Length: 98
Image (cartoon, rainbow, N blue to C red; front, side):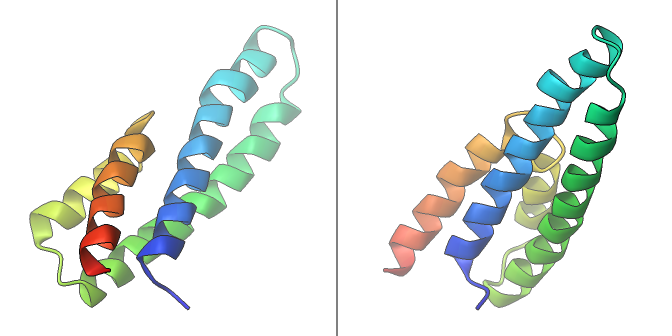
């Protein structure tokens, strides 16, 4: 059951995993000598990012997003805190559909 609400949740989880990687795992590796943190967080984030990109393409097709909006969605996936801005936009779309 792939819909915008599912995509919103995946987007937020992926964005949070990116923040964990940047602000928890990376300092743990470089400041505290715990390289396994990046391995674990990086694997989780990588899998979630691939799911995010796949879901972006599926939602783009289902909801007839233009190329520009689809590109903005994907760029939001690689920017720290981009998931928060994307959440606001997706929430508006969900509310408009209701």
